[in-house]
Length: 248
Ligand code: IPE
Ligand code: IPE
Ligand code: MG
Image (tube, rainbow, N blue to C red; front, side):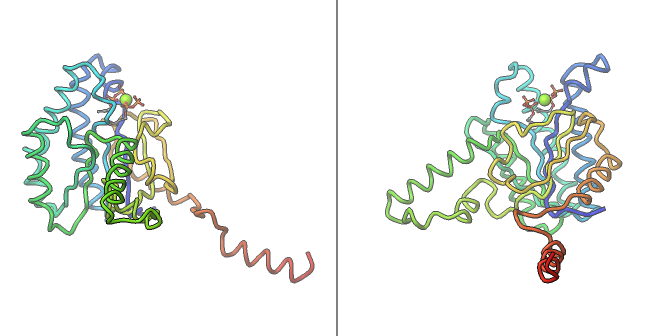
């Protein structure tokens, strides 16, 4: 099993998990929170440094108002109930996403979670809430354009690393592996820039079913991948050189 530095998860399938059991979608989301608790402690235990969880997308506002209310309520409840435990587990909480459109009490809870845990040295838990990658990139472009307009930045100084640093996720390494549950195979506007060289693992189980065993299967699969980042294996370079040298 290879432990990635940064694991990112698209937690999908709460609704289908509930439907298969004749339960309400609300029930599915509640069970999803149980799985969140579990992955946070499992990831800490395994020594993963960064865990990003996609909890609410910028497109999820288009769901029925009652479901949006439920999801907001669950975030409130999660922070209120679990913050002390997260802090005790030495977890550092960060939130990525747009703060626009979030209720004031949610904003203060998110800030409280970040402030209380900012000195913690264990797992960094990144909650992607009201997050959309296109929105993130748009906000970043706008902010950099303002810097240029104010004369503080030259267009030629805009580099890949400056863009990375300026995203909501600035300072967080790119995800090594992105997992999506529920069998869907798409990014749904998650970490588009950061995913340039991430490995993708799609698992069939619904999010509420994702436990330590599922996580271990993902890590075994990740360990089988051969990450080349556009280059070639060193041993392949040597084989090639030997073949050329022997006239092959
Ligand atoms: C994921 O489960 C949770 C969120 C998107 C907030 P879904 O609610 O998308 O569940 P399905 O995809 O309808 O089964
Ligand atoms: C992606 O799931 C968003 C989150 C997990 C928060 P969705 O269920 O919203 O995505 P689509 O609509 O199937 O692409
Ligand atoms: Mg879904």
